[in-house]
Image (tube, rainbow, N blue to C red; front, top):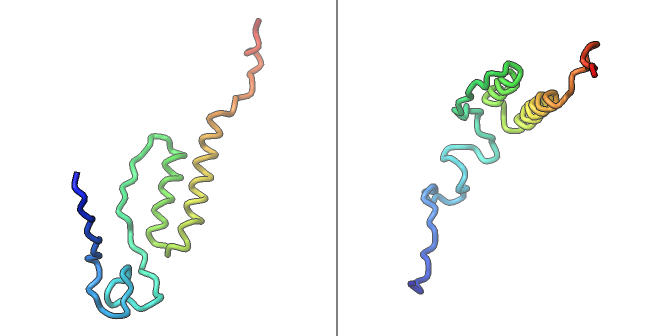
Length: 100
């Protein structure tokens, strides 16, 4: 084992310009949110139309600013949870199902 001190991590994303924040792209105005951009995440079909419809709604966030994402995510989550809950629901017994 070596007792060498680890070298500090250098942030290569900044060009060292004074007053520029490390997470800011050059040319961006201070305090301006970045424009909405698609994430490019492929969504695969599940084979369950109700689930696929809920997941398709996730595409809406590509056109929304970040502060609009939670509403869509919460709605999709609620819908998927409802779909899962419906799988646990027992159908009402039919008239001749209670045979002895």
